[in-house]
Length: 306
Image: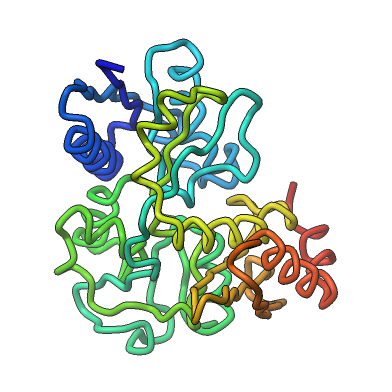
């Protein structure tokens, strides 16, 4: 192909991600012109309501899929943590790129780490996953919703609306804002979202020419880890409405996967781990999901607000 068009949200982070993929494709295919089609999604437009109440993270993806379906774009670049567990018919994930830092970042102008916050301190987060873990570990803190792009969230912190906020470390680092990170939460203390820190590239199903051009961008180790994480979320109905995390690492060729399901208030918190061969990551994810269900995850899921 002589021209490729990337569909992307227009937020600073999404555009960074699209430009990163554009530059890599230009280097791989010097004779190909690579353009970016910037789009505003419903998830970017509605900022006064939490994502879990307006349809979830899939709102960041739908308009980009419409552009793919209409032939306006050949590929769409997503943060993997925003990609629904089941893609609509006619679409596929062609690439899962090498992961950036998967951890959550603690950002504050007054405090160095979560454990420094006094009772009643206000912490902002857009994620039920982070909120549940915060409430379970630090019940003396006040957790408030925080929507908007990275710049908007930092501005609200700087205006004094929050004592601290939690953000994905990967986004801050990609935007050159790593200096705002006061400390990083370990993946044990704050289990990341499935796919956190990794980029995914979505295309129309069966578009072999585009898939072949993108293939060198796939990172096999990251892809195995993310596939295991997404299987946990898929089995348990993971979305922004479900406080759930899953994180996998490769150790000596083996996948080690940890995950949790909780009530939003942190009152019921079930976590476990599974381990298995990297050749079948979905099997490892299934094993962990089964363990969580055996410990009572279904009761938690059934009692979550619709």
